[in-house]
Image 1 (tube, rainbow, N blue to C red):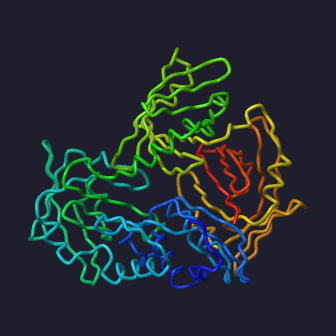
Image 2 (tube, rainbow, N blue to C red):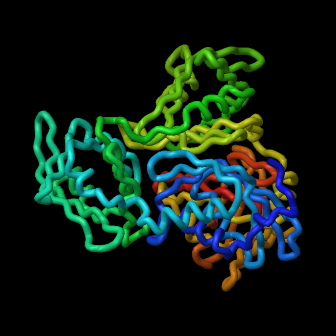
Image 3 (cartoon, rainbow, N blue to C red):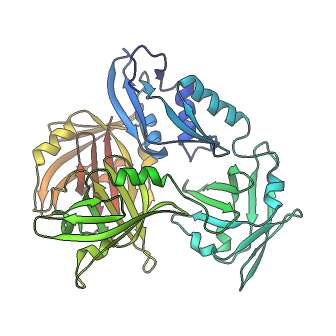
Length: 474
């Protein structure tokens, strides 16, 4: 519904609601709130200290919400566009229509001990469990396929398959919100489970756990359910409705580190409700099928196009793609090869990819970057998510070729330019030796851009790893 400027639901970023949203979205914060899930996308209205609206921002996941909250200056006000939906610990979806309702929900569930129910030991030790999701830097759920787990009242545990049996132990830390300590020995892959796990959610049917590394701060996730491969999942109907609405274009295909986007630049993709898909260019039509399923990692999009010959580029689209995020303008997919372990990336967008003939509109992109302030929405360095290193910084691109990254206590100066290359547009950044922005010193290939978002990537000339950098306008 439209936002009313007179609505009292406008709050300061460092207010009670702002702090609670920050704790809810920050999975690396040990005091984070895990007993509710926000249903995305969420839209925020942004106001200055004079309560004049300065912008609107839509976020599609916890990471984007965290980045938004950390990027805003003191004295800034935000307002959620209501109604929104939240998912409670028991799976109930609740519509929320005001800040007061949201604060009450978050505060109540937090004071009730988050995801730890009073009968957790009974839940754990009754019946059998199966690993339906295990993420440790990548999805490793398949390592535990076929194993049935039992946790006994005497604090022993077993993982049993038709060919093997592994003994272990379990215990709870002595606190109001205990951790579940698991130990299954030192043999792979069960040694990966040997951690003190935070209990996110526990019911008769599912136990969700997470562990935050004391070293690099990375987060691992472990889910047990009563039946094998029943976990994960997502709102497939919402994704399907978005997929079949109008046409899409391939904005990125990176296959084993090679950018192959330009193979599809002439094609317009139409996903039909009968689960057929057509890719149409001025000289060719390629037919295929699609399906959307739930998996242990969330929503999967399965593509199967008709191919002719061994060099047909559409063969590279035929896969079971994990959906990492989606909204009305972009669909982001990822696939980790079962062979060499390489990672492929596929993005569909609403506008054609324009940088395949060499060169591009350097003036347009430069003007976009100079128009307002930006923050680092995402930075993936050779597979490691280092976005948090840039929380709180805003970037200003100046017409004299200088760029300034600043937060409340630090200012870092650098240079920038937009140039043509054989692949399209490149953004050249140089911050010297100033950490952490020295990580950005490179000639970045432009994946896609619009007035509020610029997506870049760089393939290392050393180890061949790929880095991804996304700027989002405040």
